[in-house]
Structure formats: structure tokens, C-alpha cells
Amino acid sequence: MDALFLNQLFNGASLASLYLLAALGLALSFGLMRVINMAHGEMLMLGGYLAWMTLLFVPGALGIILAIPVAFIGAAAMGGLIQSTLIRRLSARPLDTLLATWGVSLILQQGARDLFGAIGVEVRAPEWLTGSFMIAGVTLPSARLFIILIAALVLGGLTLLLLKTRIGLLVRAVNQDRMMASAVGIDVKRVDFTVFCLGSGVAGLAGVMLALLGPVTPNVGQSYIIPAFLVVVMGGLGSIVGTTASAIILGLFAALAQIFVDVSVAQMLLLVFVILFIQVRPQGVIAVKSRQLDA
Image (cartoon, rainbow, N blue to C red):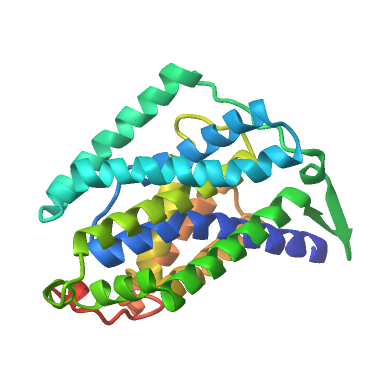
């Protein structure tokens, strides 16, 4: 039982890393623009397919390292296209934005089926990601350790970007008070565009990590978009710290619940847990103070 518990604890940490990578972009875009992007899961899918195509041309260890920036840039470009053509024009009408991005989600899924087939494609990870380590009776797969490392690096890089750079200063200013930021000369629309591209790019990275664990299919993003929304809601809308904390909590909860029940029941219990948590603490793990959110 102890070994099983420790194994599930490690699996929970890796699942939390995936939840975090999937949810960071949603937290950024909603916190800044109050936009719910229903096509966010397709950015994960796009990242997975870009990783697969990259490894076709550059196999091995170099291929998976190269796939990370390729997936980030590709997903960021797609996010920029969606933001500039749809979300920018519909940002004042949240319901229209939700419906429009849902339509984009369906279009991208069908496009993936037409191009790659409905069955999906298999990403062949390099040998150094196919092994595992045994520590105190706990099996630690190399791929999941790699996912945890990438999630930590992305979170650290994003934190430094928001706290130590000029673009981070502009993002924080717009997040606090959009109208005042515009009044003092900040190009709010450009900040929105940058943040949306950044969030989509991080989702593309999550797609690369998912590709290491299983086949990339047109619906792969849908498996993680609902948990990502739950992570953002529970964390406190727009809070990176809250998103990180809730990703860890929900990842561990889902993994440990699977000791006693199957996967589908664990997902149901996860939803119930979030609902009960929000009833007790409606503001989420971290209460975000922003005039933009209060408007």
C-alpha cells in the first residue's frame, strides 16, 4: 500500500504539471481580458501534432528539444490569429466570444481529422525518455520527470517575465485597471495580443508533454480542457499563484482518488471537490484584487 501510495503521489505531481501547463494560458487570458477561449484545448492538440512532425524530420533527443520551441511558436501564432480576427472584435460580448471560439475548436478538430486521420499519431520519444528510475520502491518514469521539469521551468520563466520585464509591468498594469492603463498611454490591445499568444504558446508546450504519454488525436485537448478550467476557477481567476496551487491540489486529488475508484469516478469526484471548495471559498485559493475583474 505504501508503494502504491507513493507511486500515485508521483503520478499526481506529473498530472499537476500537465494541468498547470494547460491552465496557465487560460488564467492569463481570463485574468487580463475576461475571455473564455473554448479553442484552448486545440492549442494543446496543435502542439502535439507539431511535435510529431518535428520528430519526423529530426528524430532522437535533438528532435524533442527542438519540438518544444516549434510547438510554442506554432501554437502562439495560431492564438495570435484567433485573437486578432475573432476575440479582438468580440471582446465586449463575452457570450459571442465563447460561441465563436467553440466554433473554431470544432473547425480545428475537423481539420486535424482531415489532415492526420481520426485514429491519431504516435510520437516516438527518444530512448532517454522511455526508461524509468526506481527509488525506495517507487517507479519514476523518465517522461514524467521531464514533464515536471518543463512545467517548473515554464512557471519560473513566466514568473520572471511578469515580475522583472517591461511587458510584465504592462500586463500587471492592464490587469489592475484597463481604463487607467489606456489613459496613460499603454497600448492595451497590443498587451492583450501578446498575452493571448503567450498563453496559447504555453498550451502548445503542454501538447508536446501530452504527446510523450500517449497518441495525439484530434480530441486530445478536450481531455484536459475541463480540468484546466477547474484549475483556473479554483485558483482564483487570473492568479498565477492560485493556478499553480490549485493545479497541485487537483492533480494530487485525482491521482490519489484512483487508488480507490476508477478514472471516470475520480473525474466526477474532482468536479464535486471543486464545487464544494468554491462554495466554501468563492474567491478561490488566491483572491485577485483587480478593478478589471470587479467591473
